[in-house]
Length: 124
Image (cartoon, rainbow, N blue to C red; front, side, top):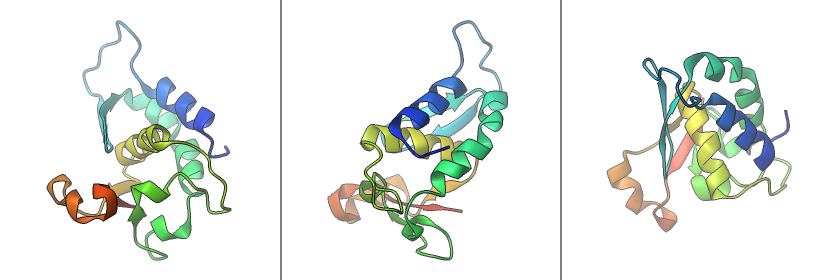
C-alpha cells in the first residue's frame, strides 16, 4: 500500500469504532493533536498496511538508521515525494503508536525544545 493521504485516511477511518459499537477494550493511539481509541480487531487487520506505509518514510525515522526525526519532516517519503499534510501525519502516527511501531523520543512537556515545538518520533 502506497503512503498517500487517501490511504492513511482510509485505514484510519476503518479502524475507528462505528456508531453503536462497544468501545470497551479499545486500543489507544496517541499523536500530536489527537489521542484516539481504535477498534482492536480492525486495527490489527490493518497492521501490515500501516507498517508498509511507515516503511516509506525516510530512514532518519527508523531505529538503527536515523533513530528518530521531526514530525515536521514526515510529510515527505523516502523517495522525496510530498504525500500528505500534518493532519495525515497525525493519523499515521496515531495508528503506528497504537500498534507499537512508533514512539515519541521525549515526553510531551519537553517538545518545546525541538524546532517548531514539534516532537521527534522513531519507527521501530
